[in-house]
Image (spheres, rainbow, N blue to C red):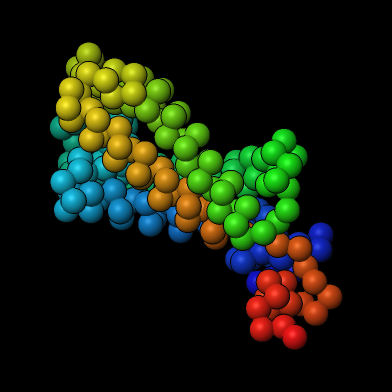
Length: 194
């Protein structure tokens, strides 16, 4: 853990901004890989790289170009949402929900899970119906994926799982803790300190 000038230590980087960017990139990558593997457990595959590429280039574009351009957009949005979490949501949750005020790994984890749930609602209520539905001709998705029938329940669950994976990883990696005078992780957590 590295200490910043503010008396706060970060698991990654010396500042909230740098820690947020790195944590968001890793969280996006882990969730993206998990989404690609969802088919292995009989859930709809969540390939946000292709979805974002189709939004920009259309359904008939070259698949490799679509995947790369969509991936750039997808990772960029994942990093932006991670920075919003780290610089705005994380501190605000501590102010508005008093039990989450302490900078502990458990509270950071809970904040990440809550942020993942918020992003799931945004994705299911707005992003999918407003952007993906017109891509496939309209009337296919519906709010909270209601027009998919039985597949909608699986898609809604897969979307929740995807955003939960993102939130958990973001909360665990963006993990500010108070700096201690001894300056070690063991002193900050009390592990092995006598």
